[in-house]
Every structure is written in structure tokens, then in C-alpha cells.
Image (cartoon, rainbow, N blue to C red; front, side, top):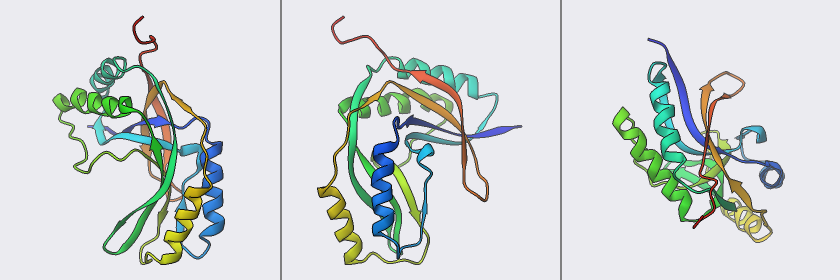
Length: 195
């Protein structure tokens, strides 16, 4: 049996505004050991499927397209930076997403569509975000880290982005970092409301 490590994501296009925020944070956080994400890989993960049997992929794509095509396209903007942490310290530096209810409806539609294939969503609440970097283990949350995030929030503006499609990605892990290859594009509903 051959399997492919896959995930479903909303690509961030264009990446420049988020990349500028990441560059600002890189300059402000030189004392932290962070593995930064390549701006070319910025995305909002909707569902991480893990290793999927290649024979299941066509059924998965069909179910996803049926679900995604029911949701009208929408606009969103970049939100504030934040940190996921656990008891040992900071883990992930992220950039929030400010989006309408349609984004959460899209997530629900995806969850419902893939459940018959045995895929269950992450037990954590859906928190739309773009991962900017991952903290290497053994670091502590400090007052200066909170201050930097607060300062970044107060100086931030964002253009409006259009969410028109999702992409099912193949994910390959390498020592230099992951490589993401698009498997298929899943278009949302382009019909304007009440048409």
C-alpha cells in the first residue's frame, strides 16, 4: 500500500504583507531560536489528513470538491500575531486571520464531507492562522516577547484577500524543511448571492 501525506489549505496570495510582518518580527526576536517558515509556503490549514492511501485520494478529492463548491467565495484579512504554547514554553508563532462566518462554514463543510472516509478533525478548536515560525524547544515566554507582539499588533494593517479556492497538498518532509506540492485545486462557488 502506498500512501501520501496530505493536507487541505487556503493559500495566502499575495504573501508580501505577511512576509513583511514576519521580517519585522525576525528583527525584534533575535534572541529566540525560531525556525522560520518560507513565505512561499504561507497557508491556512483547513484539515491535516496525514498519510492517505493513494486509492482513497480520488474519493477524497470528489467529496472535497462537492463540499467546497457549495460555499460562496469571501474576503478576509490578516489579523494579529500570537503564540501557541504549552507547559514547556512557546511552540508556534502565528499570524491570525480575520474572516467572516463563511470561513467557519467552509471548515464545517469539509469536516462533514470527509467524515465518511474515516477522517476526524483535530480535537482542538479551529483557530484560523498562518504559521510564521516554530520555536525550538527549551525556551521561555518572557515579558519582552509579549511586549513585541503587542507592539506589532498596534502597527499593523492588512489588505483584503479573496478566498476563492482551496488546495489539496502533498507534504514531503526533508532535513532542510517540508516540501508542499499541489495535488488539486478545489474551487469555491463564484456565483454572487441572490443571483
